[in-house]
Image 1 (tube, rainbow, N blue to C red):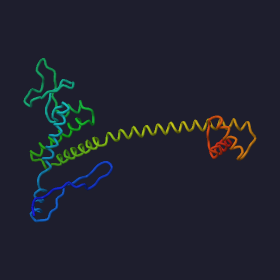
Image 2 (image 1 turned 90 degrees about the vertical axis):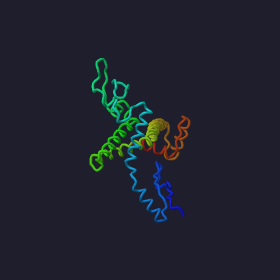
Image 3 (image 1 turned 45 degrees about the vertical axis):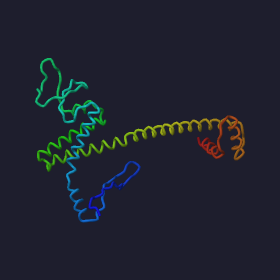
Image 4 (image 1 turned 30 degrees about the vertical axis):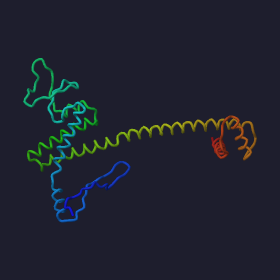
Length: 243
């Protein structure tokens, strides 16, 4: 039997919105258990932070924005260009520009909660966390705060990308249904008002009572293009009596 672990992707939960997956492997030998232990001890966290930073910069590039942590010059509009770290902080005579970190430039130019907006914020915080980790600050509380902010932003971003369209569409559908119900209710009230006014006129032309009156009113309403069941006419008569 091979001691190589065979990892499989297993679905552990699902609902109407999403799935939750995990990777697992069957362990049948001590060698496989040792291999699994070594695999679990690998540092996947910081490589994952670096990969996330790179993916954010790649997305920003697709949107014609600079990397999140790069220093850039800008002219106050959408135009930007790299600003070398050893370059002067003030423009020479005849030039007009300012320099700023890429994520601040993007957050000012990209629509709020857009992909570029999220990528700028997350990408910069990832680079900042990697820098502090490289400087030996891995156990510092402020670094835990940065990691928490990265996780929160990433979760919010993924949630918006996955659900925003459905929510917006649902709001439009619910609004249309609400408008339709309001129209139906208004139309229904107008119909009741018109029918009861017709019944009031019919009552002036007859001395019938009881079931005979209900039948007479039903027929008279039909002649006017109004249709109602006898129980509806009975309620109308009671409402007119107490009006």
